[in-house]
Amino acid sequence: MNVESWDWSRRIFDHVEVHASDYAESVRFYTTVLEPLGIPLLAQTQSDEWTCFANLNVVDRAPGTNNLHLCFYARERAQVDAFHRAGVEAGFRSNGEPGYRDYSPGYYAAYLLDPDGNNVEALYRDVGNIGHGASPKLT
Image (cartoon, rainbow, N blue to C red):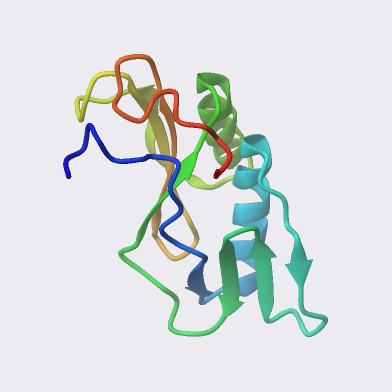
């Protein structure tokens, strides 16, 4: 098996849990930056200790998760731009403006830091990138 023959539509994670040292601010961050990617806040406990954004859960638990890199799928370059713009306009820190990266051809991404300093990326795999053309839905 190699990168060219991998089925990029195959699900490998069910969910990821991020512990937040400032829960309210982390929920605000993820609500703000995931909305342009079409990822909604789906559920939240009444006691405000857990919030679900599809396959990402934000949990009120210290210490916060740190040194994590999360990369979210974008269906077009404009979503990457909107992700970054929404975060910066809401006062969150940029960790890389939207643009093509040298990682591989057609890798269009932007980066923000969540309140605990985790690197959060939005990625569109443009023409020429290995994952381009993979269905946005799992089959």
